[in-house]
Length: 200
Image (cartoon, rainbow, N blue to C red):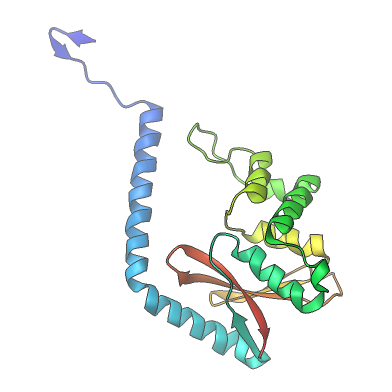
């Protein structure tokens, strides 16, 4: 619209403001990521030293590295299961992902309340069903909900050692031998990572 030959200024709409906010947030994430990449070797070494000195060394434990490809949580659990099960009974990473997604779907009341979904057109995942599909069919990183699902699915305690917090144990109601993992924020430049933890 024009008023006396001058374009009328319009305030940006809600969609435009959201888009601009998302772009600003993405720029900030890139800036932080670039900073972390520069500091990564120091941060990684500090984190490893803290996990070992404060949590693993006193228990005679060590980190067993697993490949970093988005499946690290599941790879670490498979590595742990190999310590306790016959080879024929150890699931593959893809089977474990499928079983975790199925478990979450059938126990939605235990997981869905802890999720927040964005309700805009740009959201990658906008429902619990899509989240479970993502767990099952992608190399998406697993978090606390998946750790809880794994503990309950496998009926085993699952302990997670981390430099930033005390040991987190899920599935403490189970009597079986615990599965031991380590969680790292600075292990690789790609972000968070899980490894397996084994006796020395």
